Picture 1 (tube, rainbow, N blue to C red):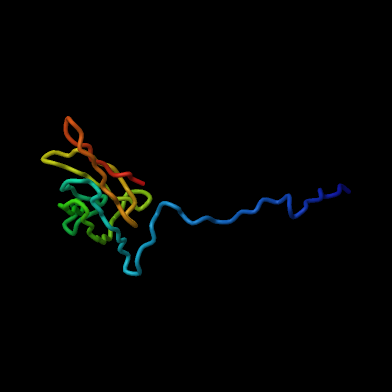
Picture 2 (cartoon, rainbow, N blue to C red):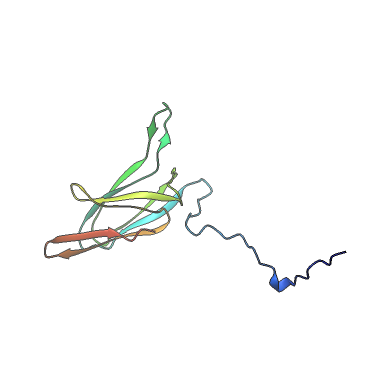
Length: 128
């Protein structure tokens, strides 16, 4: 009869489920809320969009909200999605044409940054 190997408690791996660090928690009604803040020294314009969903008539659609913000301004938004993976939204900053686009988590504060340079300006978001 073979003996079973001895395993000590400190040798066994501890497996603990981790919370998803990317997907923001939803409110009880399913909405996710966030703040867009303009830290650029000039007015910004942009929009955020959710992922495609099937509309009532069977076509595919998505929700889009436009914003325009003075320097230092902040605005609160809530959305029900559907979201891209990780609870993300697509955010686009524009002048007349898009100048920056990324996918960022729909939670907390989304800060638009910008600086004026000799040849124009640079505008971006540190997406997460």
